[in-house]
Length: 293
Image 1 (cartoon, one colour):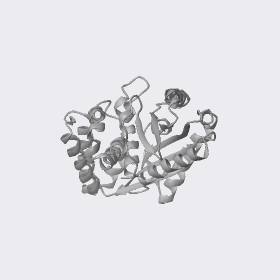
Image 2 (cartoon, one colour):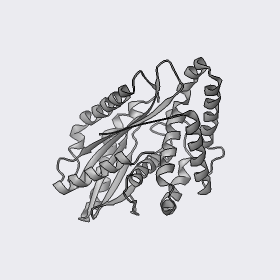
Image 3 (cartoon, helix red, strand yellow):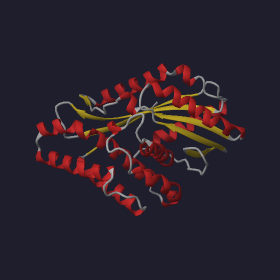
Image 4 (spheres, helix red, strand yellow):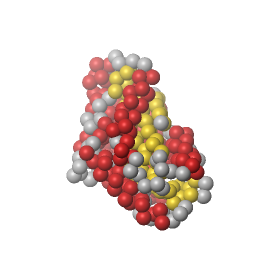
């Protein structure tokens, strides 16, 4: 289980967003008339509300801006983890997709173009691996590749839109990874972002004490693991882990002066994995835990 709460001032987030957008522009990513420009404009509105000290307006408007806050946080984390020039070749074709797609998380559905946010999830996980000390490797037809103790670890990443898609997505990932295991040095991990499934309306989480956030997130992600424990147990022997990730925005009750962006990763190692593979899975898990913006 890996939890992460990232808090900061509105002004600090504003500066980091500018840095991330400038980085994207230097790599040739189009910002104008895209959802990233919409987030920049929405954040400007949020800053105006915050600086006005009008708590009533802030509380009324914040739910509309939660979608934007989540995606800004992810974009900043991608920037901080992957802005090293040595990954430009890996990033460039993926980043070109990042600014397209529906403007709002809630506009996504099972039939919409979800590829841009799927790519963002892959980049977010890649940034954590790199920031946690693991390299990114080139590998055709998989979402992410890294190297651990002489083994190539391949990731298949999924973002189901509804609960009914989880089983189908995970089984598809198992199927995609299985042919790769003909190489005895290859292992696989399935990563599933359940944010949309667990919080389809992308609602804000109100809290009184910070520890409530961690407890609520832990319980939410753990319930998915328990619900799908039979599915996880179906993983092929060389699929060494299944990861569930959930992200929310939390604000203290009665105040909108601070925001907390929260992520929880539930790391389920395969019961069929050999001892050395379990060790590799733990190394990857620690890298994800360390690799935070």
